[in-house]
Length: 200
Image 1 (cartoon, rainbow, N blue to C red):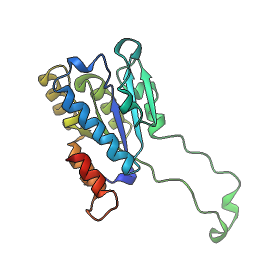
Image 2 (image 1 turned 60 degrees about the vertical axis):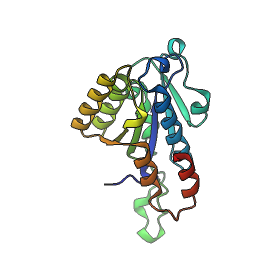
Image 3 (image 1 turned 90 degrees about the horizontal axis):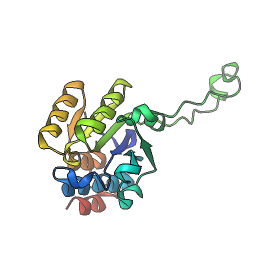
Image 4 (image 1 turned 135 degrees about the vertical axis):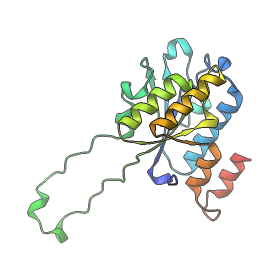
């Protein structure tokens, strides 16, 4: 099973200015988060951010925030507990009128967009906010793809324990380049050169 850009959304969890100095391999992790967000923009994949207790931990870096459609300030460790799920799966609007009274060929075609049920997620700390958000998304029947090289914790051991638990719960573990090239699918698409430049 490969990722499809038209079915994907990207969630970036808590890359906050006062948290990142304590994070294992922070510069690499943040650089990969930026790459993911830039590739998502090129591929028209919605990007969402979260910030844990921003009054204490600061906001996400402005360049990352600028690539997010919205950023959720939260106190719960799981973004889903604070409404992220409603952003990822907005409530379906009830149809207006009595369409069933019309023959099929006279009914208006449905303009409901395809649900974007593949959630590509990355962030810090992997064993706390990232993991709890991802586990709740799995419970809510989203497909969850955890971008391992854009996730971290204060210690490598905690990060790796989170990956083990998430894989056991049904999340797919991927890398930034896997996501980028699966969203592209071909070297012939118009975005290929721009994405390749970001990866290099």
